[in-house]
Length: 126
Image 1 (tube, rainbow, N blue to C red):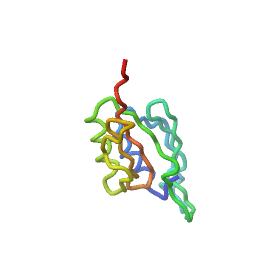
Image 2 (spheres, rainbow, N blue to C red):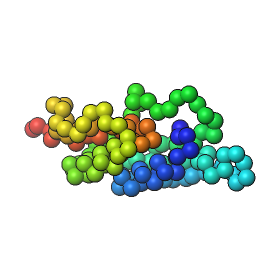
Image 3 (tube, rainbow, N blue to C red):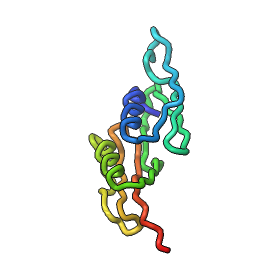
């Protein structure tokens, strides 16, 4: 649930992830107090189905790092690009590094407050 910037978030995610798809977007009707805000958007990131909204009501809460989107990458270059774009204007909770459990991992919140765990898994040992 975004606070008026759902459209900008969707644009960011489409630019960051090659497999991010917007399936449908419904906006609040023109002329009302919520005109132009996203009433409901349906999107996919890989196999994950997401629903995103703008809340026309001001709340005392926002996104929390207790819930994050975990994304595995196949190439380090893709992960680096996603981390740079998502962490710009946001917050880095774990910098992009080898943290032992992963050869490259980062945890950040984007400028909207959405928490992302970005991972390049270690190659399977045979």
